[in-house]
Image 1 (cartoon, rainbow, N blue to C red):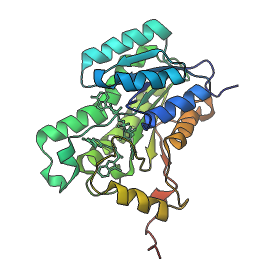
Image 2: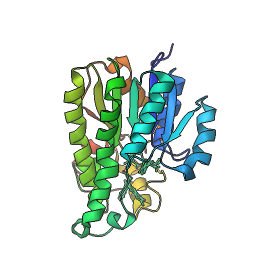
Image 3: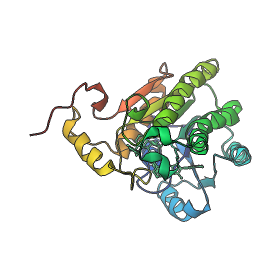
Length: 260
Ligand code: NAD
Ligand code: 0WE
């Protein structure tokens, strides 16, 4: 008996085996969901297809979420294949690298728009496209980070984007509530994925996190996958519009104790 038996889930944002989306896909598969996976562009196909095969998933489709046309296409393909989509997971973010260091006030207009389009609007665009095909008891899920609430040096425009994404979760939760569909986010602690690689100061911040967080531990994509199973399963049937921290308790701290 799996927690997601009989449910169809479409997961956006698998880039490689370190992706949080991949941790979610594995956990969903373990719990009995029928899966579809979407990736950003042709270049990723040779990485993503073999991963999908590992969990017996053969619905593997590209979708650049900057394109309304590609969102329409994948919606049509998913509906043709599955007939309905119970669960949609959005694990996508992007800002130009130059926006992720130095002072926030140097953010360019174009860089601001791009970060908002890919990291925020895309969740709303997917919600809109799939709305007619998500039955009651369905769930939408996105991924956020604490830099939306408190300053994380260099996170910059992404922090502003995540604040807008979290507000989108609440507005979407209101809209979808009438059809019995829930909308939530997981706020994950730092994970060493492609999107974290090469970020100025990430390594130091990641190490310090495990020293100061209440659970004295970093988090993994598997931890996020397990929380995602809960939020998208009927166990969470009255939880919507919520931001659930999977962060070893880091966000409750007022002051980090100095390390000896
Ligand atoms: P990742 O690089 O594995 O995943 C990011 C994904 O976004 C990639 O699959 C990439 O292809 C996709 N993407 C970027 N532009 C796209 C576009 N135009 N169209 C479609 N897809 C596009 O990194 P990740 O850390 O697994 O990131 C997944 C989510 O988790 C992001 O929303 C990120 O902000 C969030 N998050 C990450 C961390 C962390 O420390 N890694 C912490 C909290 C939240
Ligand atoms: O949401 C994220 C990753 C966001 C991200 C990262 C990149 C790096 C490479 C979005 N776009 C890009 N574009 C690139 O070209 N995280 C929560 C991980 C992360 O990223 C940071 C962090 C943390 C934590 C960036 C600066 C400071 C801290």
